[in-house]
Length: 306
Ligand code: NAP
Image 1 (spheres, rainbow, N blue to C red):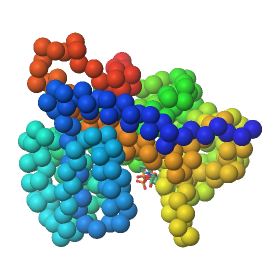
Image 2 (tube, rainbow, N blue to C red):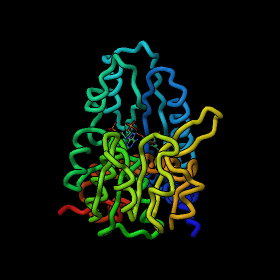
Image 3 (cartoon, rainbow, N blue to C red):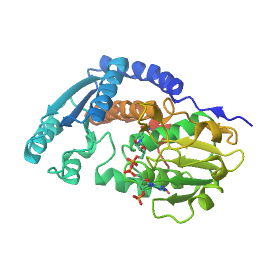
């Protein structure tokens, strides 16, 4: 068996065409969606990620506002900027690029972002919303994975899903979102004993550990669906995931490549959340039009509340 490729780049491209139509509709109603990106310091990887996000905004017609701070910026400087952005009607999404320098309290910064503009989905309100299946903005990477599965026609109900990695931004929200979709979810982390014993039962294996070559074919069930979230730069400069792609693709039924799998979807879902925020802002401005308000992905993919 050779796995079929889940092409995140192509799926993203299709979604972004739809985004442009939504932007045109918003603009015709007097709202240009705006995303503010706050970046502190000179982290080269952050620069690349921020550049990709700004490029995606341009592609979709979303206004982007880059707020760069030097490494020496204080927590108070960043908090003050966030407060101004919270009150700015041109801004529908606020993103703080992580990591932040160690003298800045990440939690404090994330909690300062208005819940209504938290397009990264990292505010405690949105995190808590995941537990009850009622978040406003799902975090972009797991949201992107969920959409990849749905777009590929993969049903998760009742499936054994194993998530390798339990971080706050990928593994944990991913597990909660799939639990909400009625999958049977196992979460593994660095202290998990005998990782293979868990991964081998996975109908759907989602790997987000940041460890190149962690998942080898012997750990994967024949016909499994494998989603590789990892992004690792090897000493020779190559970018690879956490999965031995060449080996595992001979066993899996579907697999995501790195690059070109989950990565483009993360940026795409950031734009989706920003558009949804702008649509929400418009709706809140004219409550009477509630019936007319449509946010297609929200309707389709927002987890049901039990
Ligand atoms: P993170 O915060 O470092 O978390 C890594 C998680 O993996 C932790 O829960 C850790 O366990 C677990 N882990 C580490 N080694 C393991 C092992 N040998 N076996 C099982 N679990 C192990 O990383 P992250 O931010 O979640 O990111 C994970 C990877 O995804 C990275 O490569 C990152 O670059 C990539 N990423 C990609 C995207 C995208 O758009 N494609 C977005 C975000 C992140 P403990 O909790 O026990 O430490």
